Image 1 (spheres, rainbow, N blue to C red):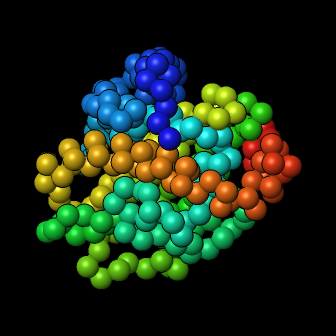
Image 2: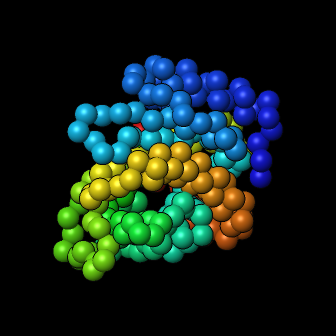
Length: 233
């Protein structure tokens, strides 16, 4: 499921020029990589131990196919970079929940984890949907021995429809991993994680075609579904 090179070139240029995308219009961002069809940018913030980072890439699928993969937390470890475990702690409603997520770190660095609130909002009619996440304190997801609880983890997957079969996805993370991390690991993380996550998302969307029919038939109008209120702005 690889987008054509001309399409990638065109959309990468658009991504660098649109407000809210990984480009100069959003001040303070620096492009660090352009690999495997993913443009990676970072932004330094005072007092942050890790730069805010994001990747922008094209997925050959509609937004609802991507949302179905983002909804299936049981398979996050199959495609999300360095995800060592994830599960639902509390389902608040169909598109909002509390999750536990654990991120693998190379030895001798300890794994990181977080309890996060995740929710989805946006406008399906405008082809603009946000899957957001924000770390919270949750007694239902207590700290794990030997794992560092991240003081801050926030970000989003921003889905922008190009056409019925292509979606531009911006994946952004603002994290305080806690503790001390070596410079080499910080540099590796800010470059590797957005690339591998978006490449993994492409692969997972292709791999799971036909496996999320219940989700699509419920929500995707092209499958006879009804647009959820969260997406009807």
